[in-house]
Length: 263
Image (cartoon, rainbow, N blue to C red; front, side):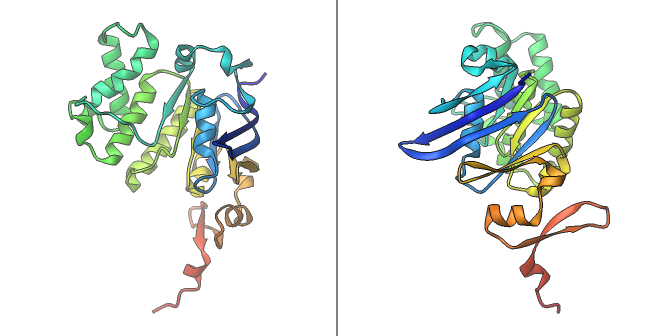
């Protein structure tokens, strides 16, 4: 049974090819990290997974049914999206922004009830930003806004999360906290598709990795077995080596740093 899959997806912007025959399968409850350089099609692929863009060929399968067979409201009940940014033009509070996610669970014209508010506050608190509930969203820092957007996705109560570079704008401590939350969510049965520019993050999360290069799947598989020096150097046109730390975790180290003269 196909849970959430891309089947032979191709897509172009104004006759410029972006994705070429991309196929990948996401298992229920798994974490899948997309790796690849800027402009290689990761964000486009995510929008196709969400039904926000329609491919020129191929299709997305969700729970053994083509995505195009679902209504947009049905999709929103199943899948939540965390974008890199959100254009909020009015003076909504952080809590208001999170409450917007509750629209997918009821009539658009229904007001927020106590359960909606409780779930939204709980989501903010889980991300460590409950104290920002009454702050105007536009006054928050980039990292705080990103955490609010992730809280909004959790409040949607969809069991599939599609996250476009979710650590974007977060300081180091909040990056690690978010990675820990992603692992917890996976253990609770959430299915997570996320993009990242940090190979180490894909390794920390475990699960699978899909490397996209020039619009094609370049490599895929278990992150521990797939991420290696050759892959990273080929993807990003760099020269790194992968070393094990004392705590047993692999990190990417650029060779120019290894060769740097010591004082």
